[in-house]
Amino acid sequence: MSTLSLRSSLVIELMRFLVEIALNSPNKTKLVLAIVLTVGFNIKLAIPTVKFQFLSLPGLTDCVLFYWTITDFSYNIFSCSRFLQYRDPRAQRRHPLVDPVIVSEIRRRLKDGAEFMGELLNFRKDGTPLVNRLRLAPILDDDGTITHVIGIQMFSEAKVDLNSVSYPVFKEGYIQKFDRSSATYSCVSVQAQSNSHEELCGILQLSDEVLAHNILSRLTPRDVASIGSVCRRIRQLTKNEHLRKMVCQNAWGREVTGTLEVMTKKLGWGRLARELTTLEAVCWRKFTVDGAVEPSRCNFSACAAGNRLVLFGGEGVNMQPMDDTFVLNLDAASPEWRRVSVKSSPPGRWGHTLTCLNDSWLVLFGGCGREGLLNDVFVLDLDAKQPTWKEVSGGTPPLPRSWHSSCTVEGSKLVVSGGCTDAGVLLSDTYLLDLTTENPMWKEISTKWAPPSRLGHSLSVYGRTKLLMFGGLAKSGHLRLRSGEAYTIDLDDEQPHWRQLECGTFTGVGTQSAVVPPPRLDHVAVSMPCGRIIIFGGSIGGLHSPSQLFILDPSEEKPSWRILNVPGQPPKFAWGHSTCVVGGTRVLVLGGHTGEEWILNELHELCLASRQDSES
Image (cartoon, rainbow, N blue to C red; front, side, top):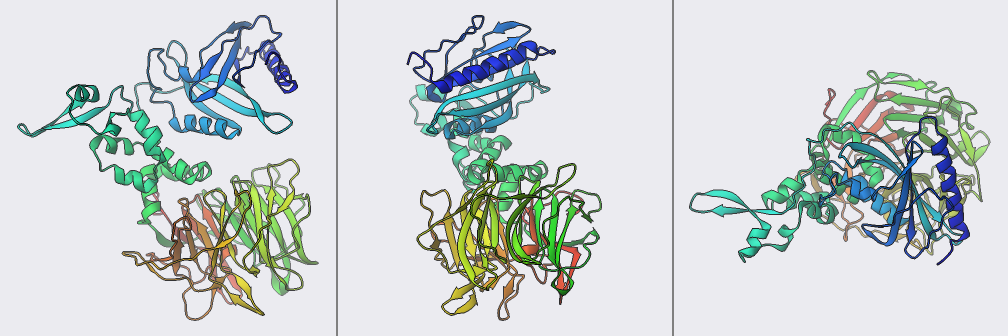
């Protein structure tokens, strides 16, 4: 192509604008602009003093990269930013202090056509370290096809110890050879071993970086722990925290690993992954907090926003709908319930759902209010100077309902399922609302078949976009019965469809044994970071204990329920609307329940991993 498209000319105008910002900046801030273009473009720009250098971008064979630097009114041409990570132009591999997780995320975002923003370590030509703040954003044409990726980089000084290597890098592989005569080990290079024509496993001829990034990081946490017993070299690699984090991120997703970041500062990724996989450290504990939620209520809804528990509404005396918001900060030295002063509170309600986005945004939907059932959506930013409930509307909303189930998918999409109408009719529909768009619009998830209509069921997310529906009060012919059935759907499918899970039996050992959960409604469903679902509590018929825990991995080829025997003092009752999951490893059940009284200063915590603090 000899000319750029209209869309490309818009990119050039944006580049010119950024150039002028840099040149007119009083601080003469260094600004680096980059554009990734498809091979074949003939670039001619009307900026005569700027020279461009085209370079191939490693890992992206169908792209080329050019960029320039403006600083103190002079222009400098740099090599590709990836090369700068080597610190030395003669180096054959990336410097070990460069976080491989960030580099892998950049590759993934470019491949998926998604926006990226983050920081990574880079080096000047003289080897001085610096922090590269990078933002990449795709440019789309009218058909939605990605034509360019525009990047903005800003450099700042980095305070790192270059002598501290946190990730092992070797220029040649080594194996250990056992000398029977002296009963000692000696290191022999792969090259020397190959020259001697002795037989050597091919995988051990790879560099440590290739082994870690391309092979070990793609295994599951359980497999990585097992493969460490193969040899000392691989064991040393699998013990590295960077590799462990990549393994968890690839297996569980970036959002989940981001939530677990605080726990890894206490336990490390290796131990945390092991404990979440084996559940060897799971236990119950009971504690009390200060403050009060007044007036007393039931049928409220609570969720976790970071390390804060948030409670909204509920049913007060004489079925009075409540409209107040309370927060319990678990990071405080003495946690206590506090009422939040908010502007324009939503109408009071009970039987609603409250979910969280991005650790600070709360999403409220539906419920039963003073004038009947509701189908409105309100959002609240807890971190705002003046928290304000704001109503969100767009498209055709779901029917007004209560006792439905909701969850968030991919951190930004609200999913609502089932419930009961004002006329007492049970519902079986599923709706989605993407709250990241400028004008959120409701979308019904149409399927050829749906599970029987129900209320009081749970909706759990696993595998990023997959949902597990369990239990509830379901329609069965002319009757309404408690359900113990499980159904799954993948919202990422081109044509999503529900299917019923055929759960087999399991003969377990240790803390796990085989059984099928009794039918129930208004129970607790916990999505674990590794994709398994824990079920307990709720309204159960017969003599079954609500405190009994059941666990299921819906991603298995033949899923099986297991009983999880947990030491400690469990709650006598537990309800889905009053249970919160904090940090991916703490399940907090609010209050004991005696008759109509809720004791919200009494909390039971299900610890999924060890707690390395004074409370453990």
